[in-house]
Length: 243
Image (cartoon, helix red, strand yellow):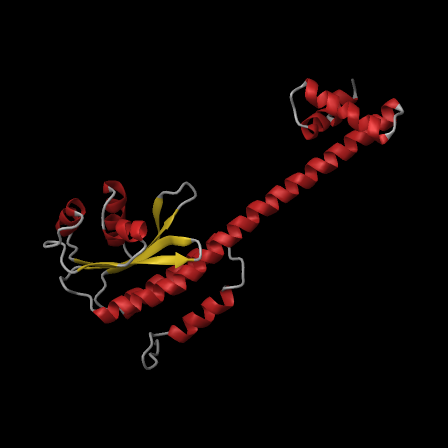
């Protein structure tokens, strides 16, 4: 069973330690998703009034998506916000500040979402943005089926979980950037090797020096409105070599 330290959350020390160890690492999205699931599970069990918890992030095309959710209730409530373009989570992301609803039936903000959420049985919401050095990257939220379910202490607890989740999101973003740079670097090396081999082919076939071979490769590229690497790949293709 989770133990609670004085003034802390169940497993708060462990979560802090995990986040600290991860802060210097490049984590894959799959790794981050699995740990976010743990954070969501702990948030839902620590804040006992919660009927469900989840995390919203931006996908690769900049759209909001629920990447972790403890129940269908969370996914349905989130999807409704994304579809309507309004709601506490959407506003938390837009304004990069926490939002709270004590009772959707009396809440005057986000009227369409609140009306639909009330019909679905939801009554209270807490949502806190995931803030990194690059800004607001997502939000963690909890829903309840009872009005006035969440306290100020619950807000502070959710903020702590948001801090942990933000570390993971920051590392996922760093991993994705590093992966893209790595692929670009590999592509550059492949292009360089292809050009080098094409120069060698021309030197051997035509009996010219390296500079002349490269000039001929550039002429082929300009004539075909291609890059030197594309012209080199075409020159090295079996069909062209046999011509």
